[in-house]
Amino acid sequence: MTDFAPTCPPRSLENAVEDHFIPAEASWSGVVRKGQTIRIEDSYGQQAIDTLFYRADDFAERYSNQDTMRAQTGAYVGIGTKLISNEGNVMLTMTADSCGRHDTSAGACSCESNTVRFGHGAKYLHACRDNFVLEISKHGMSKRDIVPNINFFMNVPISPDGKMTIVDGISAPGDYVELVAEMDVLCVISNCPQINNPCNGFDPTPIRVLIWDAVTHIGA
Amino acid sequence: MMHIRRSPEEIAANRARYEDHQKKGLEFAPKALPAPSPLPALPISADAIIHQETIPGSWYWSTKLLRGEAIRIDQAESNSTVALVAWNAHDTSERINLVDTVKMQWTTALGKGRVIFSDMGRVMFSLIEDSSGANDCLMGGSTAASNAAKYPGVKTRNTRDNLILVACKLGLDRRDIAGVLNLFAPVSVDYAGGFAWRGKRSNSGDYAELRAEMDMLVGFSNCPHPLDPDPIYQPKPVIVTRFRAAAPAADDLCRTATAEAIRGFQNNTMMLA
Ligand SMILES: [Zn+2]
Image (cartoon, rainbow over all chains, first blue to last red; front, side, top):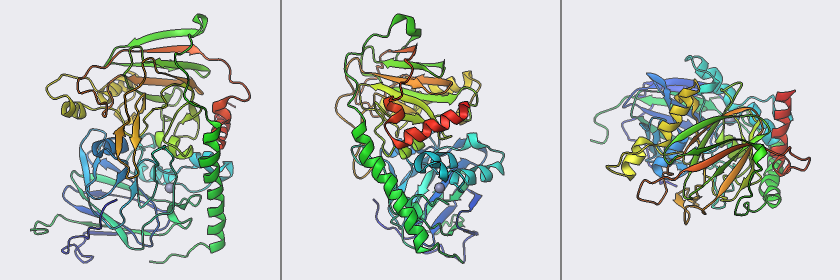
């Protein structure tokens, strides 16, 4: 768990260079340039935001959950976590987090995994992997390119005996994370449509994504 | 922003359904699962053995594995971690998926009686024997950088590069490696999510047997785990035996231990139909 760290005052809604509203269940992708800060806001609270990152000029280099967990010798993502690629490079660093708990060991929902988790009656329900497939197809990628992701605002505690379960999110309306890009990255988001587990309170809600340019006087 | 909330009745019905699955997953399944396999391993009958390979410390290997065959991974001289990846032999876009594997079985403790899933909701492996009870699905393997930090000044091989070699020799590439399963790696997770190496590495002669539930390509890397406490880089050889497994009985442990495994095998059956 990490302490609350507010965003730097010079970042305001007025000076954001991008501001995206992502409806409940929808997907989004966009490029975050090195030095820019991306804020992912859980506007209504308790919404899991499944996210992947790809190096913008080489999609074969992408977010790696195992490398990220190994690099910090821990399972959860919070302030200071460096998101590591499959090539061992730092893609982004989390610089603000008003929530305190994010998952990277439970992956995204899919129609196929839902049949195993909830029965075959759950097969034909909108799922994150379908969002990811549609979104990355716009960039010339396919299912093969989908790897284990980060679930911002999803609470997946792991017990010392190994037990793992998705429990109610702890994020409040307006909670957000900020990440500063350490390389140019393509960010791909699935605003999780899952209604079979409590990752979004069984009620998917909209989110917001904002991007700011590096401002040299911030923190000076 | 406009958003219309789902009704409290819909939400309550879904919550009740989830809590029912959760209760079964967390409370019922572990009781149906056995203790680790006993040591020493029983010999495999000679006429069932298809191939035996000794992977030297620090090296890699790959094999085709057909449905109904199995592999025994045997720590001949103890104290080795074996990283494993797998692809569906007929469609390599289907591959081992550890995040689904742990989420669907409600546990990161993958031992005897559990199964390993692909990203398509199908069972790739049944863990029919496992003496260590200590397999890590979270941390991944070593890399050139992690070895350089841990063994400064020492020339080493690492799991990341080994598995890129495996993938490329199979006509795949680095995009096709999306996580590795570490056999014989007693990684513990504390309540804050911190990883630690639990006690000694493993027993001499520890082994695991994985039965193939679809035709697969399987890759192995035999390098020290990133948390291995030995400060000296000295991975030992491991023996991998590919053999014809006994046909699963109707009450086969791995196929019946959990509701999730039963549904996963139903998905396998649909693929074969
Ligand atoms: Zn989802």
